Image (cartoon, rainbow, N blue to C red; front, side, top):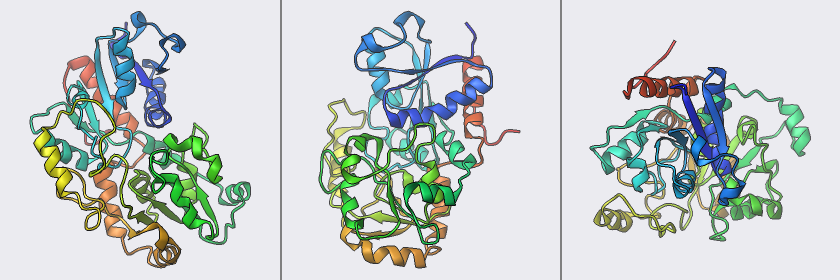
Length: 359
């Protein structure tokens, strides 16, 4: 079997969007690769334990758990599935620290890992593969507006929250109700909330493109703690960040997962006690930084904040520029190429070599 043989494993839509561009680039480079969905029911999977590659590429631990359950005992490479470092689970669990190679989307992720595990040596900064598609996407504004019943001459507002709607009526897609009297709103739910999309007349993007077309189309993006805020900032779109009473996956919310934590319990307790969503709603756990790149308001204040954000679209330009560089890396259409180059160095030489640029 070729040294450049890998299986890319996914189980959810979010993982699909994160890994598919990297897989496509590997195919382009003639690697021996497969893109496999790992289902809960092992009898529905189109692979066997014997033909799985010895090194897997994942962007979540669910596929890893499922293949380990059937006896797979190889190594894995982890590629992050978003650009938001403010969720408490980022590097919280042992599987992050056990990865043979872990790619940070941006420098803030590396700083977070260094705060949690200063001895970790298997990480490289790679960027977020999905951003190559965003970089290359071109749209026809007129035809998209016609398709979705929007007025192309007026500002188009994209509402794209993080997940959590099924757990809390004040989170996620539920806050769309505050935009019911606003013109030219298009709503894209987080993949985890797709089942509720029809209830709110939201759009489920085509799998090949995800949210990219709508990010290019929008004049203003509204979200909460979703990585879509950083994605919008790559395109220099003004954003509004919703100030909520709680955010799924963030302190002081209780972790719903039963997985063992890699981080010492005393550190988790301290971080939980320090969490003050009133004063610092977007503080990144374990480091003293705030993930702020636009106007902040409560959902009920959106009606007044939207015209303000459109009028002051350059007010947070410097913050957007900073956080795009810190959350993501090298927005130039070559992210997948660079990541594969670093994977190749690891597979052939067993070395983790940071590539800053590539011809």
